[in-house]
Length: 357
Image (tube, rainbow, N blue to C red; front, side, top):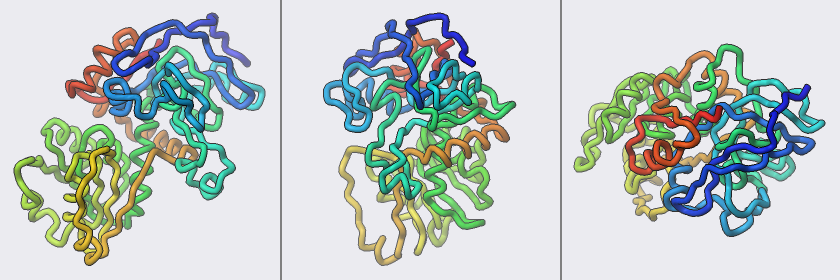
């Protein structure tokens, strides 16, 4: 079965240069043998999109060919999207007519990392909507292997959160939590909220800390046992009483300079720190106390598509999150002023979704 697109052109949000994202007509892509054509319903925007728009290119290959995707030049953004498969290559017909979510990362399946199940570290890894064209368009062609069917009863806005939730769930898996362990989450913003959602099945105490009161209100709705409003002028004493012997597991999600050092100081002897947030600013770390307390430092990036995206969809089917996380839903024509610029200015009230219908 093929669902007709009834058109050969589409509208798309194309990044041409920093500060220059244009809504323009593009040809509807034709799927290759192993690809599907998704008619996009919703595409989520994240901090990476906003950074590429305002300060990039950092990941988008506007001027130099990406080694994994082979793409170079103006790029359709969008790596968090869901929609309906309307056409497919001859190896991917099973998904035609299905509502799907796509993971963001594309891996080769053959290198040493892929064969060990760590597809997010693939030697040829590339990201849809950053390394090549993505889902900020009416249609997008993607590998069938990145797509997973949305469960019955999972609403579109919730399904559109599956990719960033998969990133949060991967971070939680990297921590290798033991039953009943207490957790401290530093940063309850963009990715922090999805790490917190990924912790919803954990049976230990989860304390969320952030500089913004409104984020902590959302953190409570997402299941935080306790919240701490961080005073940027105060030291670690503001955490006194919460973890007398230090926190067994600390997630640092903000990437703010100094937060990694704080996470290491607040970790318990023999504890684990998972670094999630990214920053390009060099940060001093006092490592001797970390070594002497035998604190494990772990890092996490993206998600393992075959594991984390289905887990995210399963969680969203049993626990919808859009009502808590989604702030604005905007049309494609307003994606710059009401989406990207709102994120850059810090005035977006929550997750921004772009409606492509």
